Length: 278
Image (spheres, helix red, strand yellow):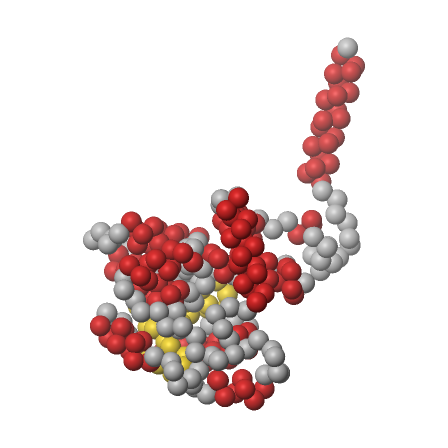
């Protein structure tokens, strides 16, 4: 069974690599895909379905859409598309929109609170449908942008993991698109004729101002330095704790680098031997 296009083959290869590198899906898993109707979650659901039919292991999929309660949201598009493509799905209607209006401070960005509330709903539904994994559509760009957002605006050196176990140990969140770019997800949705549904939150907009600025910064830098985002992703898996300032990682404050010192000693010894031999 061949892939429909080189784009689908490339995305499938990257997704398979992520699954292998981080142990995201095992034989017998029931994977629940958080389906917002945006390009990333549609693309993830479609490619996982393609991989499911080809994989040497057996796993099942169920798409779950958490409706925040906004009237303009196109539930019919979610339901129709899933039925047409033979995807098991569930739409969970909530009053998250009303809850945010009640507890959110004036002028505050609702996106992070909305994400936390929706995550709680996903955890509950995962238990109800017997899902062993919860797959989210965060892609390479999200990882890179989140790293800089936390660095610049939160004073924290963190991004997001490809695999995360919930605090109570009951749920496993996976991000199989860690190696897939936003452009690839966008083009794949267009290629597979998946209708993208935008966010209906009246206070949200497409992106927060901070994320817009970080996205533009990365875009401008990558024009001059191709491969910047993969390099940032590589840095997230190449952490050197002793070269940071977190006292929890270096409680004694002793940053003695034994490897570097041995190298310096070896160089010094060689120079001495050269000097003596002369």
